[in-house]
Length: 533
Image 1 (cartoon, rainbow, N blue to C red):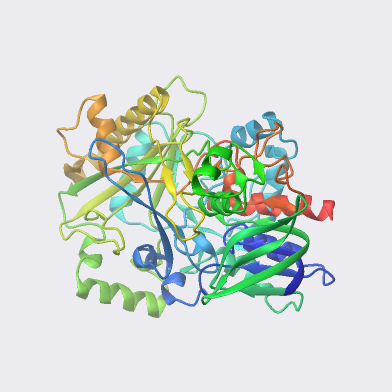
Image 2: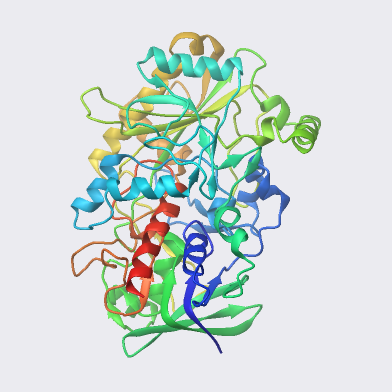
């Protein structure tokens, strides 16, 4: 049975950072375990390859939810299944959350997590070609860049936003106000930058770092109230690894609470019903989950503009691929959405409560397990969501069998706050597309369509035609209280030498996409782990 100082479960945006930081001391042995495979697919490096990756069960997990909404549909929450985790299959949009988000985390009783602590972390890990500044990093391992270009359709989108009073910016992360611009993304020179590429691959030659793939961890081994290792499966064979210092779960907001519950840490009633022996009655493991409900709008364009003509036909795809392969430019070198922005859905708010992303293409309805399909006629797509929902869902095991499906209850838009805020966001996005030069480009709205007008119709459309944000948090939230799953240094309550470091520990929804914040969170957590060693 192999022994290591640290065993890290999950090689995603958090786990790769932890492996980098903890193995920097040559006297410390580190095992990084990934349930997926090596990140060798060429689609990972190609930014717009994400459409194929998301539908491929070899590169992404697909977790079905409980039925919900007026049509009681089941949707599938996608997570990365490879070195790099979701950073290898996501849309690559990079942001950091707002200053008040991180300050609120600290005000909730979590010292060391406020913006004044986290901004230096972001600056340390970033390499932004715009150069270092008071709020921007240069020379770090995580290479980001801002999409550019002179596409007239995209320029009209930005012009419409500025007519609404949103500031045009070349760096969407430099300030927290209402703003619009080309998206900042984890892309450099036309190549996706994953957490594995940024933090793990540069240190794989360290003799004290071991990386195992295709190893599914089912349980943390707990003896006498202490985590001593993990138990799992690799190629059908039982595997155990010993952790002399700590086991660190970095498997994400769905898999981490699953592993804890299978290990006997979780709500006592849920563990009993699943047939799992209770080690620690921790009622909030898997609970209090928050997730963005993403509202989708699509528009038919009045002219043959945008990417549909390239992406919807084999001939166009071949042309786009040839350009990418020869120059790393063009449609396939862009992130999921070219334009991004933040705005206040109501003028009386003190800061933006809405995020949107826009691309000059439109999609056919998404089919589970299938790649994204592009419409033939010219179109545009816009997604938008309120940034800080307060509806709470959960993720719980249903059996002691680790292969049994999870019970994922999204519980979208369960509060009046979330329903009202989402309606305001949706109407704000319609205003954008009805403004200035952008309005002249639009022939009509195709999704959800002009018949959707009342508040309830908008809410229903968001539930039926919308998507998850893939931003679930809070299922193992940090906090100072006895019923918080982890303490302010991310140590699991009730078991020593066990820590959680991933999106599940965030006690609130950090405004925006989570890839950047989770890598920064892990870098900060490494400081605590090294201090506690």
